[in-house]
Image (cartoon, rainbow, N blue to C red):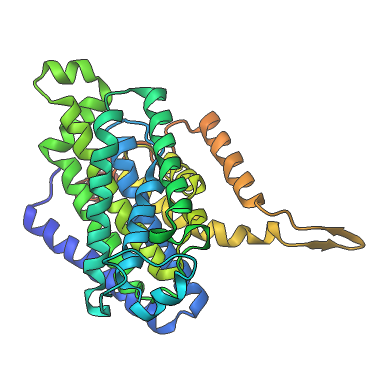
Length: 359
């Protein structure tokens, strides 16, 4: 049972309208803490859905999205930070030209984020061209190592990144409209890519590279393009995150960021955009709820000191349990679609009509 294209368009527009309504109400009635959580959830959606494109849809185990997020975050920070603030931040060594001579105004913030994404995509090409010829564990090790190289460079390129001190007092340009707007845009773009002939080529590469090549698919080109698209949106998410928390440093984009994204896409189901989106939001909420386990707790006369990092231990335990009992994740490779919903409603309607006849 297939719904008409016009009806799907109407439902898609209604869905976007509902997201806009949520953003409007949240922006108006949520307190600062809840707004920060909602912004973080949207940024995780951007990062996780794009990361799922290379890991899930294309089936290539990459462990370097933190590096691309760092490129986008630092680029956006360098472009939007006021010149006066740059002089104060880079006090050990002066900032390199031309970043020390200009700053993007707020209305060009989206351009700064896009440039960060483009540079991340270029970085994806530079990194992916040699590494995507590898497979499996070798690819994972190579991308992990290159992600760590970017981490080390951000610590040592003081004239560009300000080293371990990071960049402070970045204008807080990210808001609910920008973050959720990018989240919706990312989901729409990635969904259309996966439903296209190129998406089917990526899935063929995931299932069997030899068979895909025998069918005339350029396996290396397919993997490289998927890697660059994923890197672009990772760079965008890094730029949004930098202008949300108003600071950027090497520790912000360490391997723990990749670990978080890996948990999200594995819990949601590799290859499922629906799973990555839903789990990204749930992961953000759980991160906040589990702050209690890192705080000191008094149980009667017993005092339990807080243990830093306990949240990640719990998430790691959840990942292990999932691998044991739900190996395909919560959603597997299932995707929500209007056709699926329409068929469910039709079957329910038919069952209701048949019930009196059976009696």
